[in-house]
Image (tube, rainbow, N blue to C red):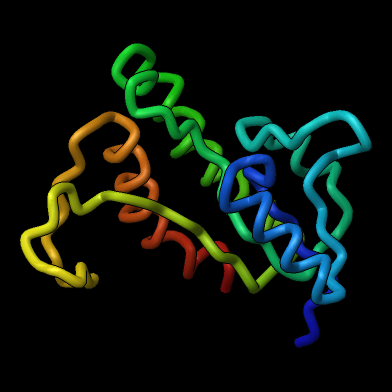
Length: 147
């Protein structure tokens, strides 16, 4: 399968900005907005479904502020969990088989280095926990959705 067009959610963040630049420099078309001005809202499935077909998705969008996650945990959980579920539903609807989900810092203070996937998890904020919940619970349905 050739990948020509990639949807990148969270394209305005640090990783997203650099990733989009890299993808464009390597000849890929990158979708980061619904139109020239309106950013993609991953919590709005109807909005996602207006996006033309893409070959792959890199899902980076999240509420990432740890301090804000303590102040507004419901917004953090909603964006990070429901937003991810919506992007997966979009992938299922469009039959997109290439899906990269980026998560971060779910391991807490490392017990050893380098941290690997066998390391115990210990999220220390609503942000970290929301990413872990999305990762654990959605990994169970990714195979169902993307089959």
